[in-house]
Amino acid sequence: LYPDPLLAQVLLAATFPDQIDEAARYVRGYGSNGIDDQSWDVSVKAVAHYPTVVYMMADRLDWTTALGQAYVYQSTEVMTSVQHLRDMARAQGNLVTTPQQEVIVEGGVIRIWPANPRLIFVPIYDPAIVYIRRPSWGLAISFGIGLLIGAWLNHDCDWGRHHVIYTGWRGGGWVERSRP
Image (tube, rainbow, N blue to C red; front, side):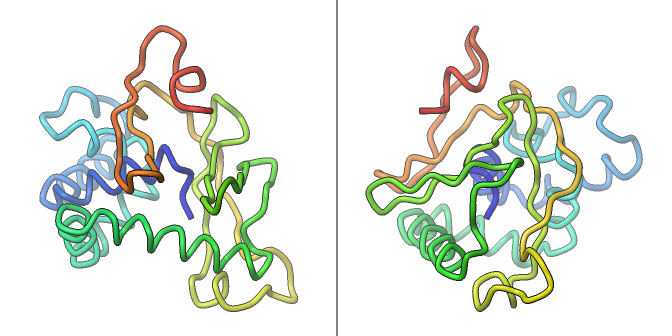
């Protein structure tokens, strides 16, 4: 249920599990300073700018490796699965537009965009709840602090072709290049 620009980076970065592990250790030790100077793949650098994401991927390295392999060999099925999970969360009333994210449904495709073109909020949720029922005690999805959107978010999800595409970061920035 990550926003599309972040999801695109996660899918690509998962194909480099050794670099994810290294990036998480780097971020734990040094923070975000110097991330872009590392020799990792650009997608790993992008994910490293979002500590909760890179930590989750490193802490669940078996899952990350499986996701990367699935994306390499079955990108259509992975993208279809993402849409299915988004549809399940939306059907329970748990995937909605909030001040942190915009949920857009067009032609059977569910897109998730940062509501603020300068910040991305990483969703926090329990999969055992978000896809099954709407909790009686509040929202099923919460968000931490907003993190800056930078030039490292240079990929996006192409839902029509079921893969990640390079959008680049030229002049106008992320909003003009990636947001429809």
